[in-house]
Image 1 (cartoon, rainbow over the protein chains, first blue to last red):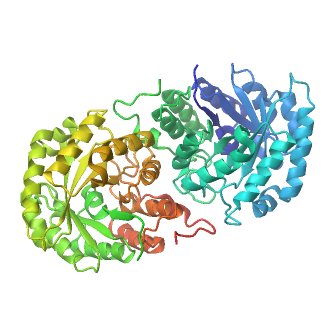
Image 2: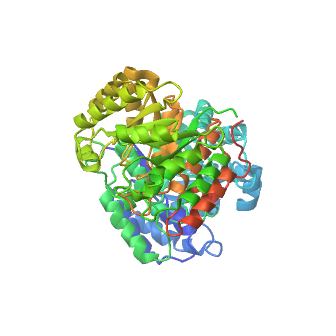
Length: 308
Length: 308
């Protein structure tokens, strides 16, 4: 399978975490298998957080072990700290992501610690992972939340985002992704910030995690593509919605992301019809959850062809 | 009022034409006044078509005359032919637009005549308008429908779009707008086609009319901005929906278009809060019509400022 661009599906983690209903492990696995069957090369399947905090992720280990049985799948997980990373590595995760907030207020509200304290956690985690034997060492990503603005703080100075990205690269993170947690990013800002960060850490800044709160998610992806980004997060059907905008998608919709990238001539390796089949599993499992997406509503344009 | 970009509101024409309910003239005028009060510099207020064909536009003359009483408003109307243009000029329209389909199949299905026959109509119309006394002569626009693809025909060859744009410029049209009638456009295509058309007729190709069928409307606008386009159509609340995608917006949502452009640092002269007030009129007048838009759902981002 030739791919020009990688879509990392975050529905089973980021999406489900926002859904009050807890999806049974068996259904989760069936859904993840369907996402894999649709050609998604990477799926963020779980978060290794304490079950008391996030009951939706209580089966993180079982789900990760199942995902590892799917041929060729890059299995990504979120970890809050070194302890979570140990559990994730034991379960066989290929990639572990730690999130840090670029906004001090968001860091305090969401992680209950300062950015400085979380950066110490990041350094300890990186040292731990880098000391692992090559055979078990997952790739290590930092996700910079609220990189484009914060619902609590408003503007997040670009200089601070750049400084954190540099610190994370120096700590040993393989990659640093920029996340538009609040959905505030606009295209000119995406271009500017990507250039500023990549001027310092180059291609270690390799991915974008965009939200569609203000309807600009795919415009921002378009700019990301133009700037050379080739890894994008998406959530099937925009699962989980947006806490700031009831009825809106939070994460950009994977189906629409695939449609955009393929229309731009970039091969994703993802089959849109098969994605709709995975969506049907979701519709059945979470009947109260609104499912978003233009492609699912409008269907394939007459004469449209995927990238070849 | 300093503006860097012009938004042409097409809700009262393009939006209402897609709504089965006929809006009373009084409500239409109140709505148009609210749109004007929000700072929209141009509104397409009516279509001078036979009332038997489009009952929603039976009051075109009265609405146009009313709109002309609003200070500084550029009053745009659609006309199907020379007879419509005569009525529009008599009512005082500042701008008249004739649409032609770039897709032969769409031309036959929508206009019930070939592209060639419609081009003759366009030449006759242009000759008629150019012969008018300067004081009464409106500006004359051609709208090239299905310029980015057609739901009936699929792909529309770019060469044919360029040829039609050249013919229209030669016929004397002041401007040629490109319309993504089916909502099939993608950003790379928008850039390519704009460059191809503008290489031939320069700034006479000055506007984009984008739909959001596939969720790419604002991504396409972003590229249009980068290519130098400074006139964009939008419909308040995406009124009228999309015939190809029930539940989706057809025309891009004016509120979201304003938000994007202002975020990019381009002054629109439009006040977003006042737009929401105009939206409330619509919600009351057309209670069965779905109203779209991210800005209306999500509200203003914390710390967000309009362009200054």
